[in-house]
Image 1 (tube, one colour):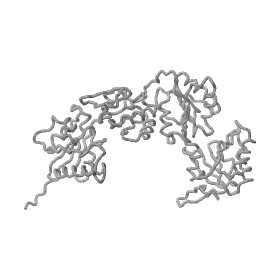
Image 2 (cartoon, helix red, strand yellow):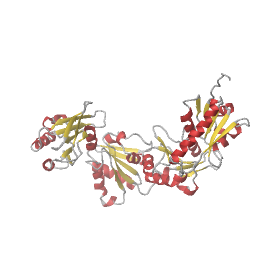
Image 3 (cartoon, helix red, strand yellow):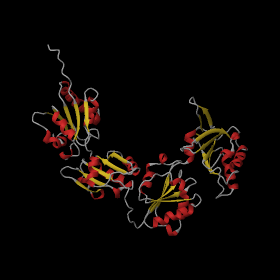
Image 4 (cartoon, one colour):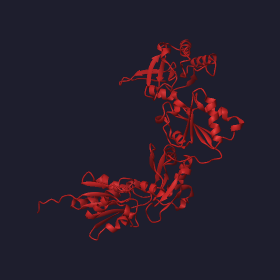
Length: 500
């Protein structure tokens, strides 16, 4: 019996590109030439697109391993369901390749596009790469091929490219498409109607392009809205190209969308809000809030103004929309909470703007952001009150503070003070001390989400009015609000859901 041990063979994952053999890399051709075994996946009909791409490089002395999928639709009597059936298939296929590798043979697994990008090879890689010497040879992806065939830039400068499978639920697709600059949706086929609806809901349908079988026989490209859903194969993608140089279309009627950006800009944006900002021709808002919005398209116009001209800003935005512009009015926090939504809707109620569409998109309001940073002080009933007496008299504010305090509501106090308003916090504190215990917890939250964030839990009696400014929000607890010191040193506060 021989003691000679056969050296294990080498595994190659070979990316073949999108379909044209001329787009195979030199490295891919060399790997196929040097292999003993050529493996490729196929459907049950036995034909393999990967093999057809590499056909001219496969020799008669190559051992071919056809890895045939046992099923093509998600219906099976396998006890583990569709996923279980596929896992069994991958295990069996990997075992077949491992037998060749153990015998010292070099195995090249062919993969359309790139081996590790939505490809079948990756399932072999995960099962074999830790046991055998492995090299992955990248290939031109369908994403790059689609952009090349369209002849349009895919993304530029600071644009974000999102790649998603069309098999995602419609709501998830809508959110991701609304919140990105450029996108490619893979795996169309039977998902095409869902993808099309998601693009419509995201406001991106007019930008969408369609590419079918790029660099393959039967290639087709065009506007996605022109495509018959019944004619769409699996090997097709939807593309939202770069919008950097895209000019605003000429419209008879624009719209105004009031967008809440949360307490501190980009990290707090919802996908829907980001989508509205991306889609806008014009951004209108208080300059400080506009500065939080990244540059989304070079063709977008920005119109910044002072914080005290809300009505003029709203009128300007509505006039732009009447001229066919798609306008995003940028608001901090939630636009419906002491912010721009009311200002826009007040002006929009005038007869001259009756035909201008106006939408309001919610954002994370300062009270919720501050409450989350402090724990859960808004866990029960609460009232939201602004201390600004610029638009309502102080006696109204004081009456509402008293009523809320007598009702034992937690208080979220906005706009507590500014350089020109210095007495309100002290007056509110004295009023509340008449009705609340001196030890009532108070959250002093400043610049939540920003670089100078500070969240402290004090007592009502120790609240120092001089330390409160316009960037601060106060949360005053009820008689039930609790405070706890955590093992990590944090002080947290919450209001129980059960009262009494």
